Length: 336
Image (tube, rainbow, N blue to C red; front, side, top):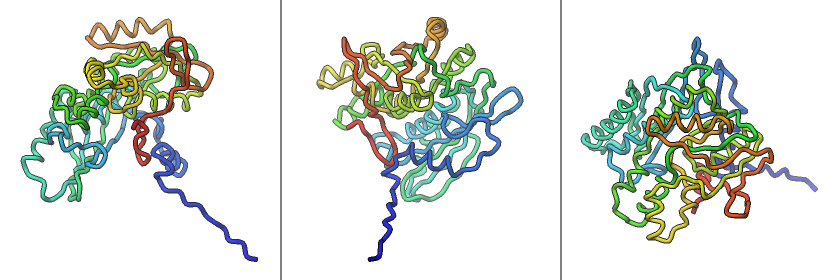
């Protein structure tokens, strides 16, 4: 009897974005980069600095809502690219945009989209320096951003230590409550702005990096829980997160009360806030917090780094495993 060999071929949907990236990483040859795949930015040595490079893409299928204005689409693609530079403490140099647009796109639409991109770039003291335009069936926009940071100020994802304070900038749940409002036809421009116009924490990142005490840092794009699991795997540590310390946005708290929402679910698992998640030694935390507060920014302690390689959520007197409920491309959202 002949034996047949059954070859199981996985699809990308079986892998998910992060395993797909690992697959790509294993194939690629290493170049001259000092820091490559696995951090928010690639980094190349440039005298006493690193040249930072990152790219991010959006499309109608994944990011662009019909409720977004062209101006907001332009803002959005620039902001999410700048967020990667912010997470490393870098100063943006400039960025290029590649536009894939249907040929029926109106001239006014294009003009407004570029105005939004330009406004975001200039607000953070950088500019759009070029790119590419191609005909495409659906709107697809890819940004590539460049920045610099002094080598001794670079904030890596790797470096979290047992006993560190875990902290986040700003407020959580802005994008989540905006998405809820969008899905339930709640017309509130302020709430939707949190989803459509994320704030890249460039100034905060630069302040943090100059202190030279941040042990690890990344931006929160796929949700707090997902980001914690990424840091946990990279640093071989665990986390204890205190539910009551999470700095939820007032819009989420207010709408949560009106709609009977589980607001902590939105704060923990929904992506799109683009705040900075960092760890810092406990004896340095207050200094770091004061440094941000002097410039009108906020930093909130939400937990600590532990030796046990688990991610826990502490609520009242209980400690439970925090699910990895964030967003992952190709697999979709674990949130709903």
